[in-house]
Length: 93
Image (tube, rainbow, N blue to C red; front, side, top):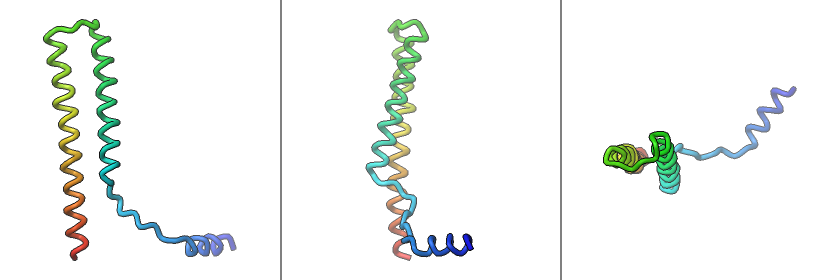
């Protein structure tokens, strides 16, 4: 009897139309979270290596923020554009 009741409950619920795509707001929040993570990592690196600012540390922070930060942001932009194009192509078919 409970099996039939579960089926009835599922049939009465409206279908969710979630395509799994992220909105631009989602990409923004994901990037904010990742950049905050990079700041935390940078602070940990800075204090764990003696808290001394020198040319080597400058290169380390440049690497962290340019390669990881801008790289992640570039991939996010590419993914957002790709999702929009793929969605438009799927809608046309």
